Image 1 (cartoon, rainbow, N blue to C red):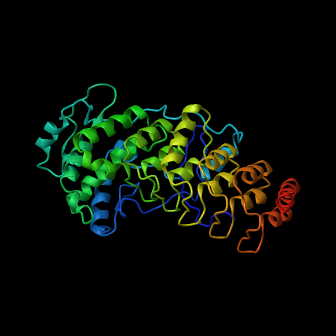
Image 2: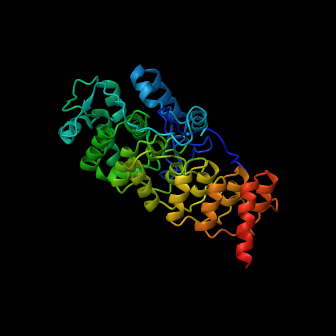
Image 3: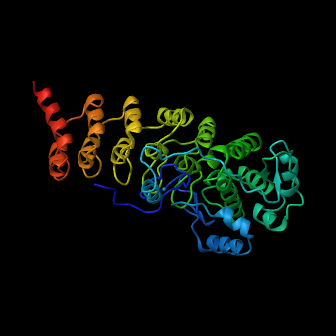
Length: 388
């Protein structure tokens, strides 16, 4: 019953639960996406000239710039790898302990960016990046915003009406925007203080660009929110939610939303759990993956996330939603022999025991077929009790 569209996913390496291999996705910002490699993808702007320009820029970039452009997009494969190494009940540690990239050409949030960029706007952002070695930058404090990033923001703000049909200069600006934003916010080692500076500066200098930036997606359809949830960088997730600009129901190429990814995590502290609660409040917990038809509850049950199952049920998760194969959350619990989860679903979810999947099997027949006697006995007991 597993999803058939497995591919790249979003990883974390410090004890946080990994997202499923079938958790990468697509279609964000009306089809406009930036590839992790620096390729710009969009509804009407996938052209050889764009890719050629970006490849040329990549070949002339420094190793630091190249590294910044590479966003690790791999989420369930590494989840499973981590789960084989750690106890299922202790799969998460606090994230965001690393430091962001701080090479030349950066300017603090307090710096007078509009004045600085006003002098640079005569050149397209791409040319400014290539021609500016960082001598015009100003650094104040420990956290900074790239001057090139702000040049790109100002340039794109002034050309928002042409975003669906960008010219070469806009494509260059989009590449700069993507590389700096994902490098600062989507890495495993990204820190909230740095992300906060970026968000504050964009909100102050180019507020009309904030929603576009926050919902910018890579080739797999993953936004910074997708990555932050999968990395368990809850402080960054909180910052993104506070902007009010994040589209909570954006699905990646595999059809997974941030709430679905959160259902696979296991917060080990109240702060992380509070952020997950906020995610579930703001997002549609019953939205179905456009690839598998599964919901966040399906995922939590499949992966044995008892805490998340309980939380989803408390927010009104529908236990009777069937995926593309006709499978319900209770059927997944029966298949896996997750008796404790099956009990939760039966007691709190008003499960319909008569539902059948596309093979004509019920939750009970699935449990019996899998020799999960405890689960089968539980289902039989509930069926008898309801018949009285």
